[in-house]
Image 1: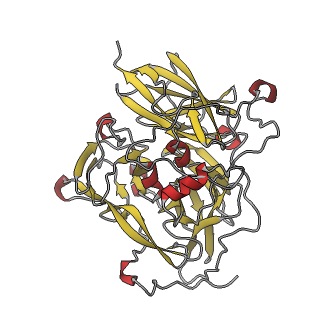
Image 2 (image 1 turned 45 degrees about the vertical axis):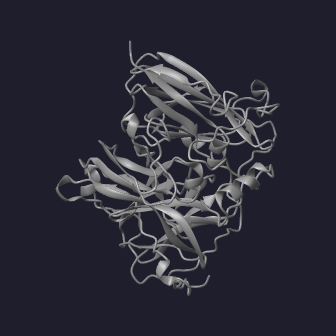
Image 3 (image 1 turned 90 degrees about the horizontal axis):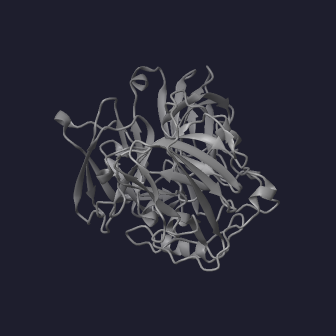
Length: 497
């Protein structure tokens, strides 16, 4: 392989090209709120300028908070369109959750809105809750350190993953919804408006109707899964491709805490540590019993933390993100000072496999701090359905606007069963709550604490939670084209009697 040479700025408009900067610590004088701005920025993607959105804090894109630091933020909308930001993985008061008109309206251009709540520790992120804006990279890391993080002898590294298109989201979605589906090609988004899409009703739609009982849980009956419904122009790690990856300077024999966030609109990634082994120590910001390995997957909206112990020698160690079911990849490089950095091709020699179709990875995750055992007060099965033609995705056979809310009373122990009867996987995200994975394909487990769970085709995942604040909380698929065509409902919590 060739030695990697650093690319200069584009000849035209060099001053407008912003260097990729992941967040540094965010401090405010005298406990004053931290300023965060939704704004535009320009990236250099494989030698081509791309104007995208971003969330700029005091230390770069995103925020890092220290233990005990409140989430006191003044969010300014410096865009020329309305927007709203959801604090993914946090449990704020419902009014601060960041969903259009539930209950707060979008921020008008030039408007500033204040937020103040106690944040949850761990690897989280923040993003627009307007799907087209998230597809334009209006998202950033949100890291809340623990006391252990401050004293541990290790280096923290963030890897923030995106899929990217030079085409406007409307064109991407027009291609996707055109029904060119089947494993690896695509159709595109929803109305691109300011609120979640209110899609048309299902008319003669195929819900992926299959005899689940005859095939058994987790089986696809020989039918092909639809892994990727759009081929993106680029796959980014910290706003860069492998033609010019971020190179992180590390120490010989050092320990790395790698915080990986899948902020992609519609791409599942495998995280491959290559020549150095890793331990998976947290998912969705919550600790798990350390799980050794060299390849771990994560779906859209999910996060994972890896601990990596580097050899006591000089060298360069790529950490790659492999697109499932395809050859494309991205990543960053850990390298000691003076190490030779070799060029990496953005296309691998072989396709990466589909992610966790048998839920084997999820089955191995155990939370050391579990929900306390107690009787279940309420259970609800949620049927996940849809098809590539017509391109429409549903919960309980309905799209947003025609949905029947999932109901509970505050304080109740609730078990939700996500039963996927379609041929695409769905990363299901619940706002305002943390849940524990307690069942996989009918088998009871004591799994991980999460806020986003990957539900493969023809599979069922059960999660348990304690219903929180009496309010309307979003429950949706975090695949943006699925969300855009209506794959969302609400978890309606009422006050306890």
